[in-house]
Length: 196
Image 1 (cartoon, rainbow, N blue to C red):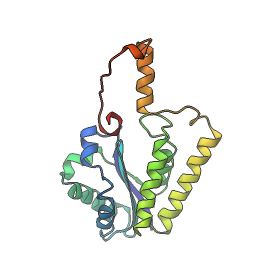
Image 2: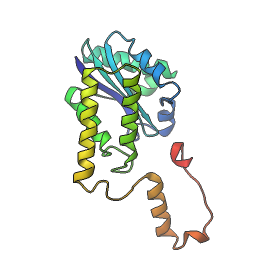
Image 3: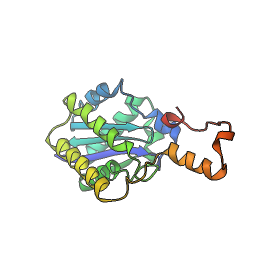
Image 4: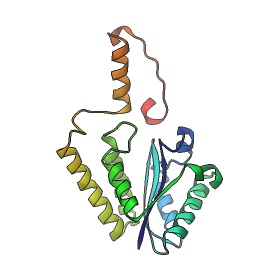
């Protein structure tokens, strides 16, 4: 059994492309069912946030055929051309895939370093896949390790000492520009969950 992570995020793709490849909660279980029907895929977790879409896969037929099949599946399932997304996708395998998940769960690969919401999103993605029956021993061990690592990082470092998010950073910047925000009108600029 081998481990593979295929995805894109805020550093590799535009928000427009990330939105095209996002999996809403209404289609997540159907997507898990569909990707697990690929001959090489035995387990799957799909992590989809405003800043990333990642497939964590346990595969039986080796990494290269599974990674290629999963990339083709992602494009077809989301109705986009593979050629339009392949330059923006990354593929991590085995230890690199495990390390990538740890970095993501700890908030070290977020738009705002240490952003705390990602751990909840990773947990939710895993719980959805587990409840639907699409995780097995490999992904269960990997994700439990990621959760305990993220908890350890938050408790033993200062990464979680100050609440940080894109919205918090925007307010902080606005306070540096305007001395009193009560005197200002609001202008909303953004996309996705942040602007909502």
